[in-house]
Length: 147
Image (tube, rainbow, N blue to C red):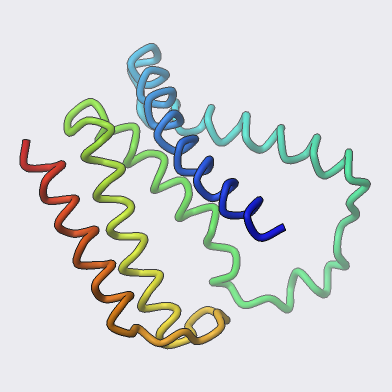
């Protein structure tokens, strides 16, 4: 099962690059980056409703929703900022620059989150191999962006 998740993670990266191009073209067609992001999230929202209903998912009790800390609801806000930033950035810096910089930011944030066990993650120390990996990713980003 583990190799399946590695493949899915890789394919998610492929999908993010394709999504950047699709959303950027939507923005060009609409001439409005926020509307393009809204449509992107809207179609995603409808897809998730269909998926949830297909899995016969129910809703948690209202008390559960009220008991969650406010910051646990910010994932959608972060996603909206990300998608809008992608839509605005891709035409200016290109998909490769955007994705390489995004991956570097994700990796650095992930190592920090893992190292300190933040946001409920299991603690994984930032050892020499992880730091070397960050260094190599940053070198790769520099080579991609340098062009």
